[in-house]
Image: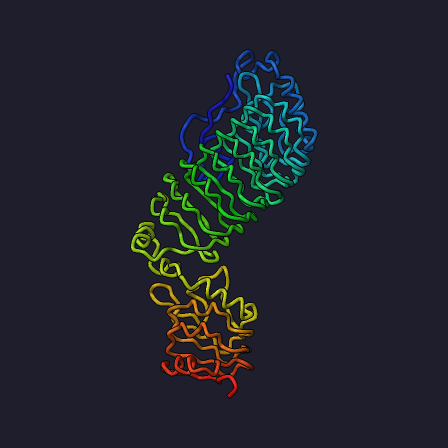
Length: 453
């Protein structure tokens, strides 16, 4: 018999408390037994593969300066392996190797593949444990838990870990890691927890992760992941926690995420996502009432009663909802910013990662549409772009005292302005045409030169 089950007790020191609460239940961690000779924990000498276990353990001891560990009780002695510090056995074979914050220094040896009955491997909290993750760990067919948190392990995640068909949780939180997420991880059919928080991953999120039908917890936060959110993640219908914050993800949020009926917590903050939340999000109950979306280029909440009610159920205050309502004018304003040297504007807070409602000089109506644009003496330079005409509800346009040049484009006559001030620019003027004169004549207040005058 081999130890196959897993539960929150086994994760007690492996994962955050929130994870433990999410997977609570089941049987207890096996402990180093105090049984006498002849009992299960003391059959090492007669069990097949036991000698290989001892050799693999000693390879770890030698590769990580075992003589200077904080606790190396019985390591290298003739004592039964279940009496070695951090070692648990089952049916005479090493089932768990859990050595945390114990002064290991060196590299994880490939020889650990000799622990062919190993179920759990945890070597966390060793800042001097360096090198890469041995791809040979992918040969541990019985491994259900792999935890390497806060070590100095570097390099990428070996694609060979995708061979671990019994793996239930994988926690690799290490700042020194790099590379992309191997698509082979999508083969981990038993995986319930994938924790790749803050471990230097770049590239895109593999759509193959959508094959992880058993997954309940996915954390890819605080990496450098780019590209779009794969719609395939919406196939993980049992997913309860999804954290994609603090990356460089772009594009819209796929409507398929609305299929995640079991989802309790969702974090999309601090990316480069754009567009409105899909209407399918109204299907999400988010039992933990935890949803974050702020600090994205243009991700916003649709201005509908249904979405307002959805946000209210999660106890978001009105001011929080109102400041994130979708504005059809955001892209036009960003286009104006880019065309008129916005990076060098005076006291400007416009940009991809800020809320349009806070932008200096912008006034919005209740539908988050721009009605006033007051950018006098703000450092604008260049020629007025046609995108200005996309601000369909604009009533006040003040751009005097800047460095603008050229003729005001005819497209701006599509705007029904009440106030237009364009004076004190080095070369900005309105064309001397009947159409422009008529357009200006319908306004309440104008100020600026006509070309040629």
